[in-house]
Length: 158
Image 1 (cartoon, rainbow, N blue to C red):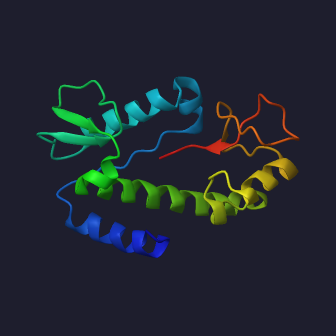
Image 2: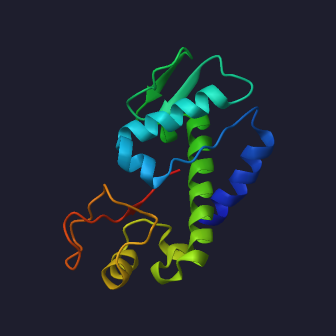
């Protein structure tokens, strides 16, 4: 989907959904927990904080967080479930909006264009300016020749 179409669908989903919950996991928390545990923690927060509470939940991926809420993980769920696809759109649009805002604070990295994904432009900015305070320290981008191998270059996911 194009970013314009995702933005349109975001508004429709927000106005038509019975309920939704968006949480953000910081880059520090991802570094502390690891990406899988941080993702499961984010899913758990969504499941336990959403109102009204779900009777049954589907999540994208191959693991369902430990909770008393009934549900299942669906591999490639955004292609197999409309509710997972809708949640994916909410997550992507929210993350992209956050990155556009972050671009104002850290213009050198060009976040408004690549949204934190490891594009050629993003890699070039990291090689030129180093890591921003937003970059996770636990994700290694192998092709960055000028950075120490212990450095990292992926932004937090929402």
